Length: 325
Image (cartoon, one colour):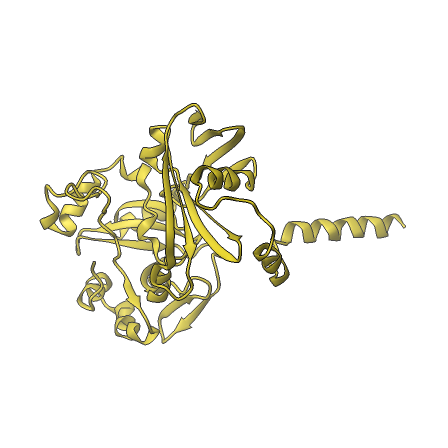
């Protein structure tokens, strides 16, 4: 009897540690038609609702500081994010935005609501430990944990041995960890994946390329790493988690290097037109987008870069094939 109990407890523990949250159509339909008195046009009410539905500690994984969410309201899918970016959290502020998601519409946004929350009688954001903040809004208290990715020293050393500079780890909102790297032979940035963790299953395309089954990110495998070379254009149009890593740069780490000087090397015409963080002086809401990969509608479009894996200068081969932003 004792042996059976031990076995049962062991099995329960095994499944509890292996299982992840199960999403069902039943849950979706229940959420779709749940009764709610939420005033969807009242930003403070929606902010309070979103916070009330989260855990006591919110872990913000993407490197630019976005906390994404979605929920159903009167049969509509509402999407949005809480932005606690590097500069904003230094100022004790955050940005809150949400909108109706419209299937089939480019970027799919309608009836957008936005508010910048600053220190006030009802709101505060204060740091109490490195990368830990306490958010207070009305009677709600939440802890915000900013994800910090420690660089793999051996991997960075390997990249440096191949001439790459910068080499900053970052996490995309897809959940994939990249290294943002710059190479002086092409004066360009690249997103490098070590492929050392099981982010997803990769299937082959052609003789060389690998495609992420979940993200549809396409990689050119090299010795001990892979370069991101393609992002599905359909995901870019939808502005979803798989639209590419250009909007999840490691801003906190970039603040510690001469990022602007690297951008000048990418495009000399940007000189005196951008701030240190890559935002344009004449348009502070616009930023240099590091989209040094192909935006493909069909994988066949990437056949032209298959030979680059065996080329003596693969980065120049990619450039000659048109991969430059």
